Each structure stands twice: as C-alpha cells, then as structure tokens.
Image 1 (tube, one colour):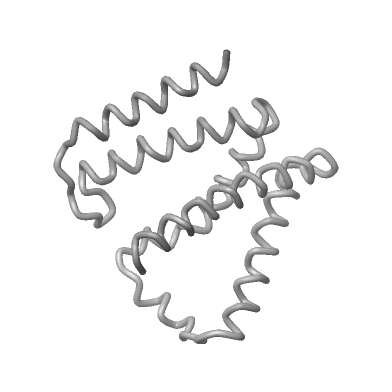
Image 2 (tube, helix red, strand yellow):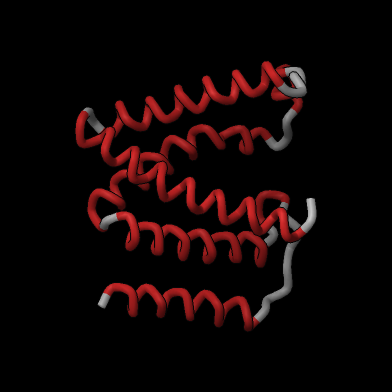
Length: 145
C-alpha cells in the first residue's frame, strides 16, 4: 500500500471512530454501557464473518499458530476501547474526548516505537516527534478555552 492510500485510510479510520463513539454513546443512554459495548462487539463479529465469507476465507485455524499469544487479546482490548470511548464522550463530548484519545494514541504509539515493544522495530528518539506531541497537547489546551 502506498503512503497516500495509508493517509486516506487513516483519515477514514479517525472519522469512523468519532462517528462510532457518538453512536455508541447514544445506545448507552438508551440501554447500558455493557449492552452497548456488547452490541458493538457482536455486530462487529457479524460484519467480519460476512466479509470473510465473501472474500479470501483464510482458515480460522491459523489463530492457533499466532505467536506471541498475547496479541490475540485485541478483541478484549477492543471491548475496553468501546467502553472507554463511550464514557469519555459521555463526560467530555465528542470533540474533546476525540482530541484526548488521539493524543493518548500518539504518545503510546511513540513509546511503543521507542522501546520496541510488542515486536515493533525499535526507533531512535526524535526531537521533532516529541515536539509534535507537545504541540498537540498544547492544541488541546487551546481547544478547551
């Protein structure tokens, strides 16, 4: 995949995350947070299953060969993400919650790269990335006022 396509997909992902957070928060208001989070996971599974049936159909048994095993916890993390996004949007509103979520993603992703965690290739420290994160944090302060 080329860089331009990667950028477009990342922008689409961010937009979809914001929309999903708003939708999930509304479902929570009418049900409960775990009903909403459960629905998200069940409907996501159904969507994945349907897409899998109409595309490549790689064998599910491949999951038994995944190593390290802890990377299979993505679904559990997904449930926690759904819960935390709902709660943050409920408490802060979509814009402020999304800003803080993105800042946390940037900081944690950079730490993962710096420390070479979870099998990611270790990156050298770069001042420009630290400055970029600081500017983003400053942007939150400006946005809040």
